[in-house]
Image 1 (cartoon, one colour):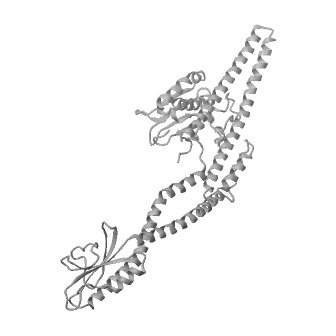
Image 2 (cartoon, rainbow, N blue to C red; image 1 turned 60 degrees about the vertical axis):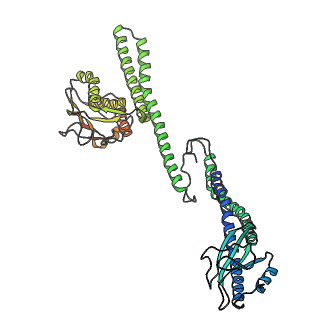
Image 3 (spheres, one colour; image 1 turned 180 degrees about the vertical axis):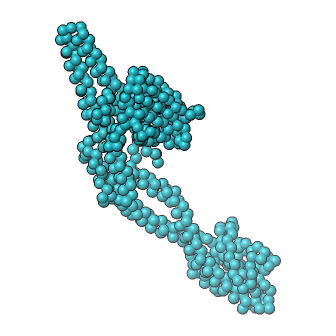
Length: 462
């Protein structure tokens, strides 16, 4: 059976039929052989008992015969057996030396010690006349010499009987196998009815209908599958809702700076003096920078959500954090902020996408520089023990307790901060961290002032 995702679709009913027919094709000749063996065993028992009884009867007549066993010797019991059966029985009386005393000469002499007195032994032999079954016993008249008594018959009757038994058994099998197979297929078809109903339920739904599939009344074997599908559908629904909200919020956030751009451009066209036109152009540049920053962060957020693991490799956290500090150093200098960097002597590495890790650190440093007042301090550090981690700490106004979780939501900004921004930076940080199983926490700074953002990576995994 092919695994999911390979080749064309397969019918579950056809698979079950294949699994039923394949063993039957193998077991059919085996069942014929077994049936024939059973028929042979059933036939051998009565025929062997009959053969032994006649051997005992002949031996008994010999024991009552005169000591000399004079010829010709007649066996009334055997004569009656020959006339009463479709296949005659044959008898032979011989001396232990091999000399034939009476009877049929074509019956082969027994091997040494093959016959004993007082007990009939049976053997099968092949002769030129055909296959024989022979009953053998030592006997002799009282006071006379010991002779070997053998009573034999051809195996034709036994084989015919075994064939009849086999045909009867095969006839029963030919009758019952189709009936049982038909009932099994009917049961399987009825058992697959819930799957057909589920297919119809899904096919009749609107493409946007992501309601959970009904689990009530489903077979116990289908419940885990339905529950897993419902969990996945809930994730898809939540993701679609999040994307719809994101698109709506992004459109709203872009509308304001774009409207400002349009307004400032109209005012610039109507400016009466060069100074007034220059001021309007400065406002246009600020609005353009804001739109550019917002678009860049929207792209970063989308990339964080859609990043694939096939681009992961070892990332040196110190290198990426140092690069993020370098890229925000001009903004820090413009506000007279002391931007410090700390890292251990040994490299701290994790597995991940280098660009995404850098984007995460850049947003942390950018957020700290934006919200730290002039003359403040921002410290970025990389930690290697007990597990890889990165921290960005500032001595700014900090974040109220009520806003500490909300700051990671998209487009959320702390009221009264006065700092420009899109409200996407920390959302990007959390999205990238979640992508790699890392956690982002926010707490007051080490001296009880400002904010301390910490990204903690699982050991050996970003």
